[in-house]
Length: 366
Image (cartoon, rainbow, N blue to C red):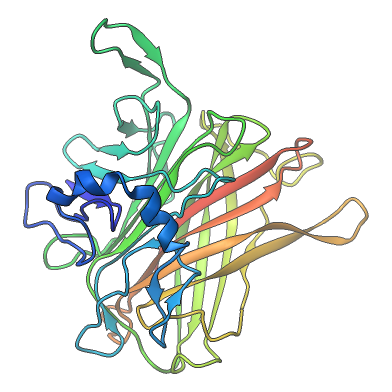
């Protein structure tokens, strides 16, 4: 069983079902600590203030999600160990409520904790969409049973999960990177949900030159002002200037060729009058020297524009991305990879007074 769980509060285990030993972050609770730590989840999240990764000067960065504190320094100055990140809680977006996710390869199901009225917490492969690009799609049960009376209880629907694992494994059999996104369209707001993304093992980062990574993404769109959800997919390209972690560091990226589907698997028309538009998202080059941390983590903003009703160019989608480098980017036989998520918001052009939030996950390779 592959298990991704919340750091600081829950046990972190990323291992094959029944094989090997669980892996723990040194700052992560063990089973014996879990019961007590669950009661302090809100306090721990508040203390984290959106991020706790040490930056190049040893200071805590506030641009990352909650999770692993001060990733362990390896034998190489730019080699770091396991990192796990999860969405920070937000009163507006209602994200960050995903407490743990386990994958059962025997039944091809996800076991999801932390979200109310999603059945028995077991998510089966989606129907009719069970795959988006290279990632798997799952859905929660629409009913549950009262254990005492046997009565059927309707659940909040729909809940969907997008799950991705690296094409590369460590010697122990664990995937090198992974992510999971869970959202629901059962509220007139964005609804409760969350995401987790993680790296197993170290990364070795060059201190000169540039590197380019390509791959794809899959995501979920939810709405404020309307119910329902949509599924998305597209391509991702990320380039990094690796020069010495100085003020010239930069991350450039594109998310393009985006497509959208209803939860029932119907393709959504894009680009016409009063239709949804999903233009290319651009990573904003900050130029502040904080894009790439020695741990291999980086984050920033992304946006795009459309022609508005007045004929002028208007900002359309805006948001943030969060990512982790993995593997050995100095080894020609490896090249490394990147796991990450992005979250953007926009006014949906199809409706009045409705905003959309898209959360996407990606794993890209060199």
